[in-house]
Image (cartoon, rainbow, N blue to C red; front, side, top):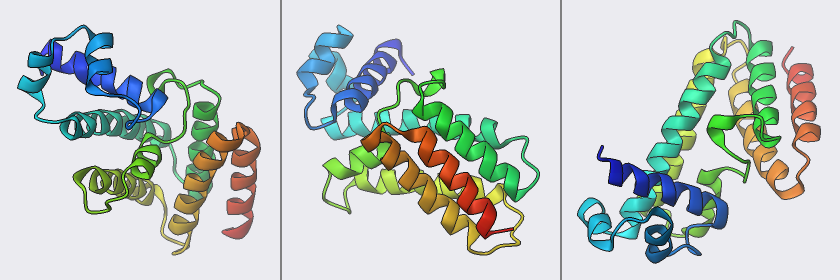
Length: 183
């Protein structure tokens, strides 16, 4: 990837995640990045293509981060504990590779795009499915509904932490409820 293209994606991701996609225009991305409009359009035909590139980059970062956080787990209880502890650290800005917590970029993005058949909405669903599959690979399979419970609680925890600013309370409750329910 060229340096200019990477700079555009990095800048767009930072601005979109911080302020929302609809509130940031191409001119703001150009101004902050210092890249010329012609260069931007040589890499991206539209703002939607830039959004998709930002989503793809965030997806790669998040999946790599989550794989690392779950890499040492050997039981369902460890998956639950490691996952929600990692989320708690993210909610409290202790995960440098994810940046300052501003909710889930994919939830935030999908909320801005009402067309569920758009490429952007489809990519947000793809991300959520990939996260689900990663968690599923770590579970023992002893409790068939555990994966659904973890994923629903994870999404609820992310949203609640963003809305209330009280992520630690949420993650502790999720760990307690999941472990008590599926033991």
